[in-house]
Length: 142
Length: 142
DNA sequence: CTAGGAACTAGAGCGCGCTCTAGATCAAGC
DNA sequence: GCTTGATCTAGAGCGCGCTCTAGTTCCTAG
View 1: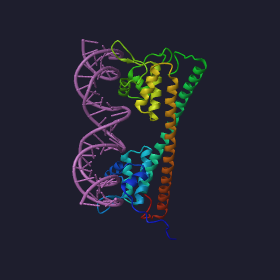
View 2: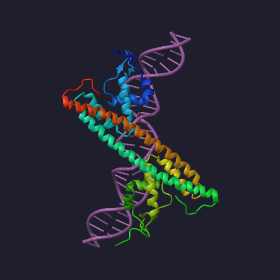
View 3: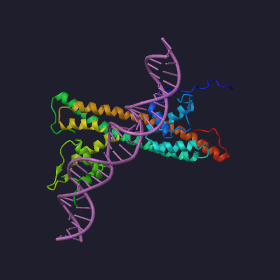
View 4: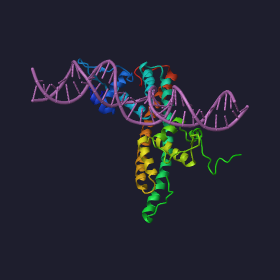
């Protein structure tokens, strides 16, 4: 079965920035830091040309970063991937650990949310009462 | 046996740190930054004595911080509270805005979680297959 | 009285993750 | 050729939120 998709024209750094949500600066920074699996291609004039695979990898990086993975861990993970097949178990372990952290984060945020919601309730009540009665409790809620 | 509850014996900075989860350093820092509603009491010798109300306020601060509120916003909120009754609507607005951000954060994290879960699935599959067959796809998943 | 730990102040320092600068080069359109 | 804007490199700088230092003072126990 033939592949209908075009051979994915390489992207400039600007286009890659737009597609990943990273800044151009950040893209160069990530590269310097070794957060890309393979070396990025260059034009004769020295400009970077990103392949689709690079963009996909970067999108995963963005997710990992968004969810709080430190650059150091991301670097470790990238290193494993760069070293090629054979260490999938290790990669899995790393991702699993991160996943657990993400879940903990979500739980923590949900708790915060409920505390804030309670506080919002207190104020909403207070405001409603105030508007109704034009009277504030001098020792009201903080 | 001393009563840790009622007339709420004032707490040392160390005890307050333990109860709020903030460091002693952070407590002093917060005070300098004007993140406390009222001035903290002092002993004759100049040591801080925190009241229960301070601890409660700090616990809210911790939740707000944990959920990503910048110190600057926290400071604004504290300012409103310090100015006393009359600006509850403004406080409510601030908290509501933050609540929306928290919800957005949770949604974002949940999306990350699902991306990561997918990736974990890919690897888990890979590892299982590899253990079963002792064979790795040279162009396997990143 | 003495020792040891907790707390005090003012201010410097730090870790993270970019972000920005400077000065040069490249590439596309007129 | 010239202009304009994107990109290049190496490295400095920054914003945030604490954290740590130095040198001193307080307080409690023995």
